[in-house]
Image (cartoon, rainbow, N blue to C red; front, side, top):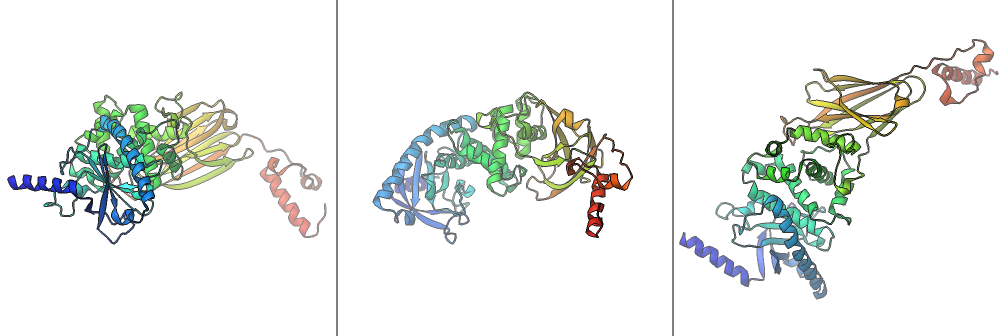
Amino acid sequence: MVFVLLFCFTNNVSAEVLTEKSFYIDPSFSSNSSNYTLKATKVLQKNGLEIYIDTSYWNTKTEEEQDKIENDLIGISERFVINQTKVISLFGREAYPGIDNNTNVVVLLHPLKNDAKGYIRVIDKYEKVVAPLSNESEMVYLDVQKTDSPFFDSFLIHEYTHLIFLNQKPNSEAYTEENTWLAELYSEYAATMIQDSKVYGYFDQRIKDFFTSPSDSLTQWNGDVYDYASILLFAHYIVDNYGKEILSESMKSTTIGIESINTALKRKGYTETFEDVFNNFVVALAINDCSSNNKYCFKNEKLKNFTILPFSNFLPYSGNAIISIGQNIYNWSAQWQKFSGGNGELEITFNGEDGANIKAKYIAKTKDGKYTVGNLELNEFKDGKVLIPDINNEYDSIIIVPIMADSTIDTNSLKRWGYEIKAQIISKEEEPVIDNTLESIFNLNKPLSQMTRQELLILIVKIILYKQGYSF
């Protein structure tokens, strides 16, 4: 015991006198992927941050450029101490003073590749006797090339929140790939809760990213920009409608993943489950209308006018018409199929893949802009039907929302489940009586859009006969 204490004390004294230090890094993020270590120079220790920069990168900069970076980092540290307080008040804090007995968060800045912003190494929380490649620090790694980015504060807080997660959720199962989406959800929310709502910031960029793939699975994690966007919008939906305490309670819960959200909802007195929240979320994405239901909207000012763009399917206004659609869907995702146009009764049939826990909702928008939301009842074969009378006169559009939400399936599953939707207009208009004389048959004078199917066939015959030399 005496030896260990002496060893730690000597380590800390040495750290104070050294200007350069060696660190282990993750080569999958580094722009120099062949190296597992690098030497870094300490450039700032201020406001709870101890910042190092890759020495080889630092030495390529002129004195003027180095001064610029140092000034940027001073500003970053001053804002960090304010932002850190906000995040700690919600989630708690990282291990403090931590394995290195250092009250500062260590930040290593080095060039990253593929537009990566930052990362952490879980291994750093362990002593070297257990994990020889550990840096034995509460430590984050960020891209040195982005220190002048207007989003850098959010990048830093995002990674810092991962350190909080590691401390608040010590269960080893929480670090598995299956639960990555939830750890990222906490960090994304923290990265946006610190920003000024009146300026364009990190949150605004994520909202734009969401439109890249609105049907992205919430839990399947590839690290794409739309993965981050999906979980961020879901986080804000939870905060807007159930309270930010759901996030903090779930992080501190002894349960993990989806079950930790269920635990938090129950502890805060809600009867809804994670699946219920998700189902309400996908409706809110489509209509964002509190007047329909106070759970079908966002309250955040930046999402005041936000709605997704559904797949659009237009039905002709005359005659009977059928549209058939077949798509696939990931678990914990939804799609939005919009039907408009038509004249008469609209019949929509839905068929989901047998054995899948697939559901469907319908959203009917009336001519005066009001919404009716309901469940499309499916039988044991996942078949269901909805009838919309007088579609043209009463309704502006109908949206069918297939939803796949099955908590019994691996949250990171790559499997997709199929569904088919058939929309059919059953027209009540009567076909006009056509005089069967040659003169009446071949002297049709009306726009194509107003012709019946019989009249269109007559027109085709007339063209064929004309090409064969007949005149009329």
